[in-house]
Image 1 (cartoon, one colour):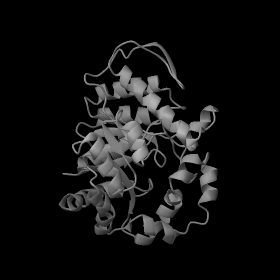
Image 2 (cartoon, helix red, strand yellow):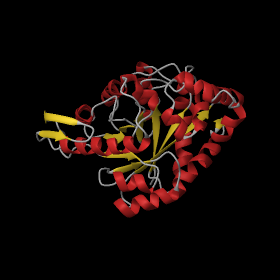
Image 3 (spheres, rainbow, N blue to C red):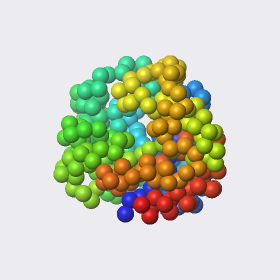
Length: 321
């Protein structure tokens, strides 16, 4: 049976409220919670970017049942992979085995802040392969020294390494990336409901692995208010990955999305009170073979109302589908 998750969207909410939403999402019946890991919001109107790992540490203590995951962490520039390995191991212990480390090759928006530049996509993918390999090595709890093309490690050991390590999910978008990352990943992350991607992954790793997708929704009792909020907070979403990965600042996303109309956003994101419309938006993921689907409720405004009023009936409809 498909599992349904809730997204802790750090770009649109401060840290204390995120923890409260995590508690409410668990109470509403979500199976898992994923957390974005950003240094900047996509748009200035979103207005937040707390440190995801501190939030997840607090959520691990405030919840008891839901699985937790990063969606996703980039371990190639802003973070050294040895540090990511330590953070993931600690969070796995704090959550008592409920954590999945979601990895990806990142966005310029978050990674440029170190002043190290933004590599081309092929190099980023190669860096991610090396980073994921290092993280795997360190999960053994053994002493690791590494001299690679992009990273060096001198006598590093995880002194608090959870038994069995930390499951790793990696964001992939095509057959080439599956060929690169399947040997290093336990699970697949994808943001488009592409059946062929799932078929290729299942051939490589087997059908019993997790395939984790995500999509935005904007529930509100007032449809026009939902459309207005989705346009204000999520019009960047329509740019596609090629744009989203390379723009460096929220101001850049403001400029790139200034001609996106509210009706354009409403065509991509189900807006308003109709829960059946949300189920229809999720169905392509179910049909493609995704085992896990996380929803993003757009905007901090209305988040509590969504969790209190809409989450439980939405989950009932999704599970019935």
